[in-house]
Length: 180
Image (cartoon, rainbow, N blue to C red):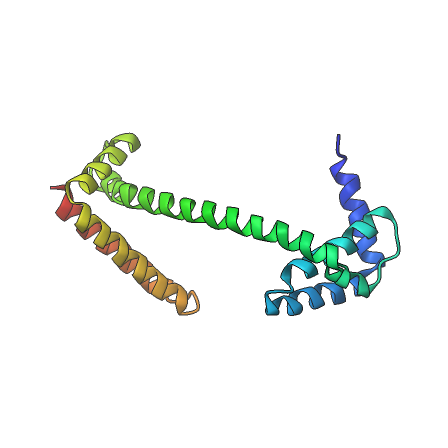
């Protein structure tokens, strides 16, 4: 069984003893990854530094370029392509599912406040019914609240102090109208 505490302690000791090497290696990997085609080999190289450190071997800044050896470029990019495809597909599925759930559940909290005594399950059920009854209007309400809050986030996050209350009141108005 993994001894987490010992592994963290040993990891800290390796990094502490090689702090400059790791920092420079990480900076090379991050800055070099701007070129995109260098991402996989540089991640491989930085990981190589970590593995050498865990083995107790000497680490050098040049180790970050280990991924550029012919066989390592192919291996690292094979992994990266598979990883990105899987993450991309799963990310899109998760995004679609979370949007659907967001739309179906968006009236739940206002309903809980408006209709005292309503249980959480009953409010969810009623919210879903509102969406089923008025799907286009529900999607429009969702998009408007989403856009309002995105605007707030784009304004250095501070704008949310204004857009979040506007969204909440807008959603309350929409719930009053659509729950009737």
